[in-house]
Structures are given as structure tokens and as C-alpha cells.
Length: 174
Length: 103
Image (cartoon, rainbow over all chains, first blue to last red; front, side, top):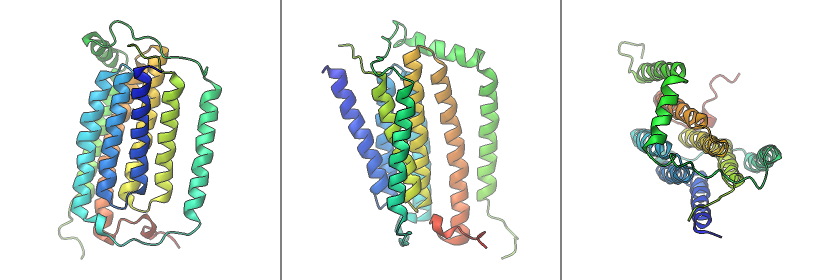
């Protein structure tokens, strides 16, 4: 057992436990903080996989922008103080059973097509350097230029939609 | 020391995280936490993308992670705006309360 495997196991435990904390925490603020921890763990997974640019994007966009947006809305609504409504009694065991079924299905389908002993390729000499980011950028702006531009339209639509949805309607009935 | 972690370990972690996200969507009634669970599922899919990209030695998986992150950002912006609008009209974000269309 080498040091990378020990690091991997510790990281997976942290990721799974923080996801469990997200599922079980009563307060929405705690759930958001558990999710930030989970995103950080996944970012370190990306570093282990030789994708430093994706890792930093993960930290910036997910842990930075998206979770700050979540925390803003939680505090804006005061939603963590809402009274808890009772759920359907049979819902939770049924959901856990369905989740176990989903886990087995996903594991079966994925590992059926994988060689169980397949190890990751050794990183090329360039993958941990600036050249990897240059290659990523060249691929993005040559081969995937059209999806990149469509992404900008998507972000524009999302921005306009968010503003329109939250606009207070002045002069509306009521 | 160069680590040789099997690809299947990453896929297993990804599958576990995805399942926990799906479980969160099913058992939580707070709409904000349902949204966070959806983010968890997207994240697990991204982890599988990057692991497969590394395994096959291509960069396309990382490009797709890029697009998934963008779509997630757009989805969160619109979704949180929807939650704020629903909270204004119903004073609740409990997903069980959003049954106005039920006959």
C-alpha cells in the first residue's frame, strides 16, 4: 500500500462522510458547508487525476460562486428556521431501498465494461505542466468552439431568466 | 512515489456519491437541500468523466466537465431564482407544499 493509495482512501472517506452529512444535517447552512467540503475533496481527486485546471475551476466556480449563491439564498429566505413538516411514513425506507438498487445497478453496469485491474495510465510528461493547460485551451477553442459559444448564450439566458423571475412586479394586482 | 490507483476505485467513489445525491433528492423535503443533492450528482458525474479521460489518455472528458460546470452554474442561478419566487408566494420551500396543480 503506497502513499497515494492511503491519500486516496482518506479523501474518499472525507467525500463520502461529507455527502452523508449533507443528507443528514437538519440545518440548510450546515448542509451547504458539508457540500463545500465535498467539492474540495473532489477537487483534490482532480489533482490526483492530473487535471489541475479542472480542479481550480471546481474550487472557483463550485465552492466559490455556486455555494456563496446558495448561502445567500439560505440567509435571505431564513429557510433554516422553517417548521419541519412530517413526511410520508413509507417514503424514507422506500427511498433507501431504491438507492441501494441504483448503486448495485450502476456498479454492475460500470464494472461489466471495465477491466477490474485496469490501472490509470502513467501521466505523460506534459500533463502536470503548463503545456497541459495549453493543450486543453487549444482543444476547447478549436475542436469545441461551437459548444463554447453556445455555452455563452446559455449563461446569458440563465442570467436574464434569474433577473426576470426575481423581479418584484410593481403595479401588479395585489 | 508514483501512485497507481485503479480506475475502478474512482468509478466506485463516483457511483457512491451519485447514489447519495439521488437519495438526498428522494428523502429531503427542503428544496434547497434537494438542489444541493443535484449538485452532488453532477459532481459525481464529473469525477467519472475526469477518471475516464485520464484512463483513455484524451482531453475530451475534461472539456465536457467544463461544460457540465457551466450548465450547473446556469441551473443553480435559475433554480434559486425559482425558489425565491416560490418562497415569496407560498412562504415555504417545502417540496410537499408545492402541490397547487393537484386536482
